[in-house]
Structures are given as structure tokens and as C-alpha cells.
Image (cartoon, rainbow, N blue to C red; front, side, top):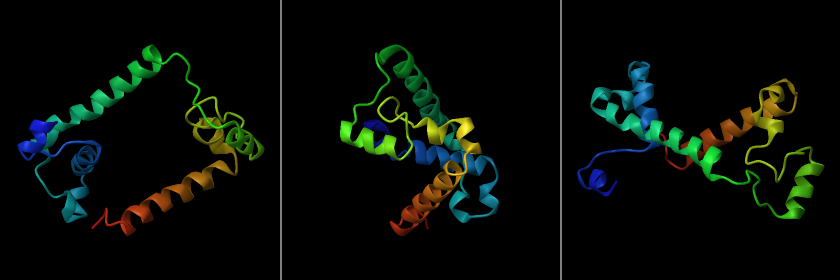
Length: 127
């Protein structure tokens, strides 16, 4: 990574998302995506490495997938309807396919997505 930075190369997830968006035609809609994405194809190995590393870590290096959360927080979350609090990193009530049929889960995800987008815009992440 030091050598890539030293040589002026961009790498990482955000660079990969920019490359993928450009590959899908976003360069026709915004000037930000108008660059030679073929020169950045090598960087897509970051995504592949992250996926492989995550799979290995979760399936072979993790003894217990439960996350250590304060018991008071777990009880508060369970009171709010998140029964999987303290048992998994992502609550099943929001991130499993069955949750999308629940009337509460989908608006939470949509509003959360807008808040993230507006937060990135407000922080100057998008131009």
C-alpha cells in the first residue's frame, strides 16, 4: 500500500466503486466518472481480496460470531424488537430477505440510505 501511495496510485473501495460505475456507463451522466477505467482494472483485486478475506475470517477464523455488546444495550435493542441483538453483527430483523416484507424494515433502510447520502454530500464527499 505504501508503494501504491508513493507512486501516486489510487486504491481502495471508493476507487473501485468509481471504476465499476464508469464501467456501467456513469461517465455519460457525470464528468466525475469520465476517466480511463481500463487503467484501473488492476484495482478491482481489492474487492476480490476483501471478499475472500471476509469469507475466510468468518468461516475459519471466527470461533463465535456473536458481537460483544453491553447487556443494557442488548436489552434496549430487544425491547425495540431486535431479538438478534448481541448474537450477530447485522440484525436479522433488518438485513434478511424476510425483513423486507416487514413494514418497518424497508423504510428504516431507505431513510438510513438517504441520511448517509446527505451526510456524505454535506461533508464534501460528493462534488
